[in-house]
Length: 243
Ligand code: BTN
Image 1 (spheres, rainbow, N blue to C red):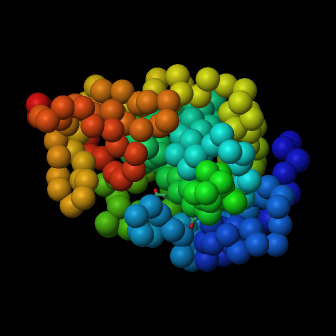
Image 2 (cartoon, rainbow, N blue to C red; image 1 turned 135 degrees about the vertical axis):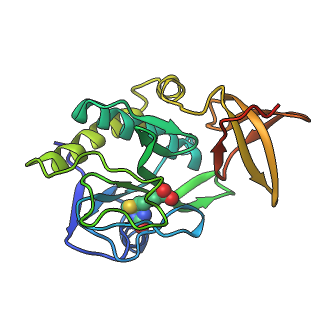
């Protein structure tokens, strides 16, 4: 079992917020896990539905100067999808940049936050937040997300949650410490490459084709006006041909 210091909560507002709070008091890497969150945070100011039955965890990290914010997110996506596959025997795909899909449903979201020191070009600290919809929530998912969200399994299997956390930590730290060609894995798990997509940049909607994922984690897309690289935001996969 990974030796990282751990905090466990029955309930918390947000494990990411807790990690940010304690970042001021420690230079250690720490794992925070909660059984549910009352104010789970998603990307782009959205909330993350966090009832009992899911895994809500944040890693407080102190990355070296070789890592940028996108790297951590990409590494975590590879670690989570590999963990899901090995423990649940289902194929897990990555929708750029960091949503994990099983059977066309989003089963995991990742939110990396932190304090990036632009002068030092390094993190003061980073918080990697991972939310996995493990068991089906009682009463199902709320209306606004029920067409997108899915859970990994219907009912509780003893020890599965703990095992998922431990295997995720093994996978993540192996990648984080330089032990794996994670970009090759990331691309192999992509459900976006070669697909027609839509994205919004500076308030304008563009149609494009996803061509490649660069080592930086950026998405290379072909548009009517040539190649573009995307480094943040959200894309939509389209079924009809666009360009
Ligand atoms: C997203 O899909 O928009 C990202 C969701 C990230 C959710 C996780 S759950 C653990 C951690 N604590 C939070 O408040 N958010 C992240």
